[in-house]
Structure formats: C-alpha cells, structure tokens
Length: 210
Image (cartoon, rainbow, N blue to C red; front, side, top):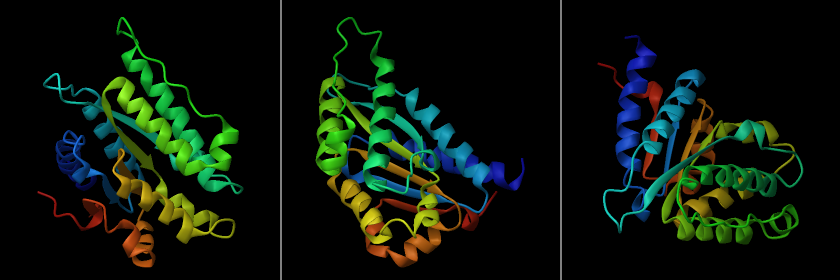
C-alpha cells in the first residue's frame, strides 16, 4: 500500500464513522485537504459510497443522504453564491431517486432560479428543511474542490462567500464535508473564524501513515 492510499484508507474510516452520526448538529461540518488532489477526490467519493450504504438503525433515526458536488462545475463569475446553491439544490433533487422504491415517495418542489437569485439563503434553507422533513433524512453536502473559490477572487468577495457557507454550517440544518487542495490552508489562515466551527480540520499531508 503506498503513502497516499494508506492515508486515504485511514481518513475514509474516520470520516465515515463521524458522518454516520450526522443527524446530530454537533457534526455539522468538516474540512479535509491535501496537495494530492486525486487522493482527496477518491477519499470523498469513497466516503459518499460508505455513507450511502448505511441505513437508519431504528424508526426514529434519520437516514443519512450524502450529496457529492464538485465546486469547479458550479462556480460562475456572476451571482456566485446563488449559482453554487442552485446547482447544489439540483444535486440534492437528484439524490431523492434513492427513495423512489417507496410506495408513497414524497415530492419536494425545488426552488426556481429567480427565487434562489433573489434570496439564496432563504431559498436554500427552505428547500433542505423541506427535503429532510419529507424523506426523514439528514443531508451531508460533500463539496469537493472548494478551494476553486480562490480562482474567482477577482470576481467575488471571498470574505462574504466563505462567510455565507460559515453561516450555513453554523445553522446545522444539514452537514457539510468540504474538500480541497493545499490552498485550503490559505483559506483557513485568511478566514479562521469562518471554519473554526467545523468539527474536523484535517490536513492529510500532515497525517502519519502506518
């Protein structure tokens, strides 16, 4: 087993264990980053598969529903926050397909672009709360390539953008797992208060490997 693979194996086990308990607001956010992008991407995808295979152990326990989004595909110069949330909402809607086997599968209307553009936070929170209530689940939003926001610094206010996601994580309406390259260290240094609320801040490059 090589260096990257052993680190990924360790982190998949730790993160999967943490996020199986995602119905608790105390696990509302985590950050994992590394210079090795393929390893982080594989780690996040493995964590999603692990979480997706988990089921609720009792009638009162919410099902964990992970939703993977590559931020590189959703960031646009104009209305960055609104576009990011709009595409995340689309990904959440696609995740509802896991419930189609139910005899009476509920339907949750996704907000249209005009609503998200005008009131991004309100539209997003209203939708995820309605989705989780309807399907009795806990959403984990796995946002890969989050450090792509640094490439848009000339077009968006990074302080406001990261602060917006800080507010979403802090609200604990759902859970967030943010992944990125080594530049996440720069985001943590520039906006320490925005990520201090996360339950885990993991630099995979600093992990000791067996």
